[in-house]
Image (cartoon, rainbow, N blue to C red; front, side):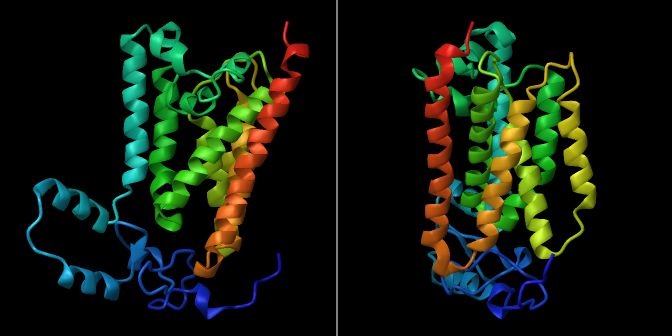
Amino acid sequence: MSQAEHNPANYCYRHPDRESYVLCQRCGRTICPECQTQAAVGVHCPECTREARQSTPRTKPAIVTAIRSAGRSGAPVVTYSLIAFCVLAYILQLVTGGTNGLVTNLFVYYPPYTATQPWRMVTTIFLHASVLHILFNMYSLFIFGPIMEQLLGRARFLALFFLAGFGGSVAVLLIAPNVAVLGASGAIFGLFTGFFVIQRRLGGNSNQLLVLIVINLVIGFIPGLGIAWQAHVGGLVVGAAVAWIFTRTHNRTQRVEQFLMLGGVAVALIALTVVGVALMPGRLG
């Protein structure tokens, strides 16, 4: 792999040896995770954070203070929120009949429903089939989510998570249209490969992560486990594509290009969904 030409603008202005993909929302300087402070929109560098605090009124409602304090602390609130939604959804599944109950039947993804209820391709991310299923996925999200959220920022992290999850559902539609699937595995695999792509771009050692991805992917092909490997493959591919876009468009001047490229991924997934629905009648039964 050839080494990219060194560009000072791509490195933290306070730590010149640290490459980063995040810019200060106020001054536009590149900042590494250690120097980032979450703001209402984007992140701020230490100097801009200090200036903002000095100009901010001292008296605020307690709830506002608590929320902003969590943001300033760099807490991965998006990751924790996703985990909370998944846990809440699983509890609702249990109290409404489990995998055959009301909540599961309303939001699980079953390809024949795609034409009339396409939102299931995303809502199914929050459902799980068993305690072990949700424990494994939430543990993976707890480990990799904060890392990716800090590297990418909250909005881009959410884009990666949901596009990868959507990609997993699209893969199921195209490869296994008779299979009902649920779980965050497609989105989790998107985080795996996203982290792998970014690590490679930063020059980090990602061999151990590659082994982990391969092992988990192979497990999905073992007969009798009931694992939808199609969703894993879809999330893996889309996660890698989205992360590649982030590594190529992380400068502030490339925000429009980044938005258009992410939109292109979304449009491609929608187009594949339309194709899958059109082919559905001849593949069922």
